[in-house]
Length: 374
Image (cartoon, rainbow, N blue to C red; front, top):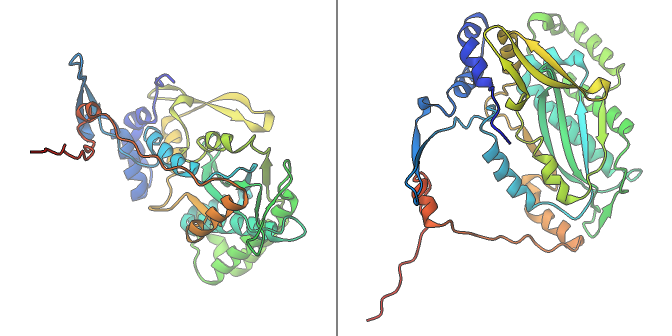
């Protein structure tokens, strides 16, 4: 893939100073904007690579490694996918998306850490409960969930992507029970259970004084108004979307790469960047994913981009069921055994010494010296 002509860093360098002066930013947001602007520039230092054959030298600047930087996700994504490859099972996989009504967005952005966690907890508890119901599957499932907070136009759109194997363990852990190849769980049931769990969590958080209210949400600080707000949420249909199943486990990693370490916008979507406007491509999902172009002022572009900076140390990928950290060690091998899958091969490798000469920042592999016989 060719190098994109425009980057988010170009927008920050052109309009970042005026944007910081006019906008109230949190410290993590300031840190992200500064890191993206400095990424792979002389400001972060670098190292010189030299070809061992022709002697050609090239300077490579260091990256910021910020998880919100569009340029720094490739290595993290590849390492994460290599680990997940060891966990794939010979089963069909399903992709489900949980989203909340737009009326909740302002409150969620004022309470990001608490309500993003509630979004994870409610969607996971919904899947675990409905899958365990004997009327549906009657199994224990394991899955991963990924938080995204944006839509195609960079507006606030919090939602959870879940990737779930089509089946699970029986309650006595003696059998693997598969779902139908083209159907996992009824989305209408998932939607109602998800709505109930999320609203119950909101009510609990309000009762325990775990929410803050200011600006347009200030009126919700009064219990009467908050109860009325919850009533309106119950009157809406909450969207749970089930995408068609994957072709097989060999397609899962390729598909996951599109979702796991994605940021709000990639550089390849940027069409032009100037002092007065930023243009980018977006897909209009309401009209058959029709490609469209949007043009914003640099300040508005940065305002939309910075609202997707997650709270510090907030994990955006989580694991549940028998894929949770406390269960994975024992139950994942059991799933392989019941599916007659051999354990994954762990293959080590040693890079050629010339590679380490060309990239001095990497440690040299330990090489045992030859034994001398006298």
